[in-house]
Image (tube, rainbow, N blue to C red; front, side):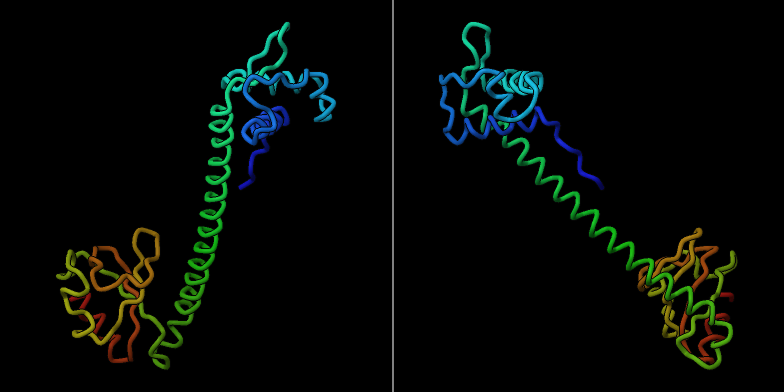
Amino acid sequence: MQRAQIPTYERIAIDIANRINDGEFRVGDKIHGRSTLASEYKVSPETIRRAIKILEDVEIVQSSKGSGIIIASKENAFKYISRFSNLASIKDLEKQVHAIMGERNNLDEQLLDALRKIMDYSGKLRHTNPLAPIEVEIHPGCVHIGKTVSEVKFWQNTGGTVIGIKRNGELIISPGPYVLILEGDVFLVIGDEKAYDRVVHFLQE
């Protein structure tokens, strides 16, 4: 996420407000004219005019042709610069959140990739590797539909451990004991060779 740039005239308005808040300019003081400020900040008089207009709008300065630019409120200057301080903090937090989400998505993708690789070899390794998952679909006639894995005592009855569920095109990793058994689910289960037959019989009975 790219951070938006603050326009030059607004940065100058913030800087002048900071100078007022720091006591360099005091309430009632008359500060330099637009041409002098333009020279000091190395910008055009039009840029200074827009900066002063912002400060007038938030009642930090007052400006007139006869009187020039006069400091009106230190309190308003503080409120103005505080707004940008808070904004910067929010932007930093947003950047942190996006970074954390990026890392989380990366880890999730690695987990999914590893599980896909295990599943690709499941057919070959089922009888040689107890950690290769089997896939069993939950058909409409399954008596366990609507119950949780814990309720049906899945592990006790089959010796298999549910490591994932394919549901509505998504893969749920490590669903836990309280996940519901729903029609159309495809359970990914690990266990020994005997567990395979028990799982198939248990979920398709």
